[in-house]
Image: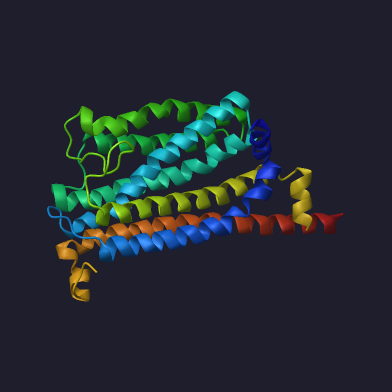
Length: 244
Length: 59
């Protein structure tokens, strides 16, 4: 187990082995997202209360789930980077942050587009929306700190500390709909209970969530591999690779 | 199929602007980010190859 962990912690090993995953993830994300959009837009039924506007759920919910889980992943990588000083963990933090920030913005934008016809407004300062906006600022803060002092170790450590501290926001986002009075509906998916909606609705939603994850790992992997070779440009293995 | 006609699909029960804007924005974000990252990596590698070639020439 530890041997495996150390192997994948090596930038050279990670760069060479992870390349094989890219075509697999590209194919999987294309097919799964294509099927999900087709199912969600054309086959899934309309909601008896929200009508056809419920189809926004198939892009909004996966974006919101991915925004939170990418933050959790970034915080775990930041913790690993702080404790074990693994170079690849710091590169992983830097690779997740911009993708997470964009996905959080997408979740906020699609939520606004769903909110306008349902609530009559694009934005309200309610707990779920505000805590998600804070999530975006946390991603932006990590990015800004990482870039503020160039590529120094201090900048990396400061960004990692912020990423770990920001974890406190995740339970706030999750439970905001229970703790405060809010316009936002409760969670569409929970791990402990059966979905309240029929399979014809949670089926495409689940497919889209899986598709979003495939896309995320694909984009993150491309970015992380770029980050690795950029940082290791003076090392023998990158020099060797350039000559080939 | 949930829609009887293409017109009904395009109308989206009166919510077409919001539904199609959401899907359009999502497509642009996902595709845009992916292509940007792939292109950035490729152009960096190409630049490095050029730098390496120039270094060899300089030597």
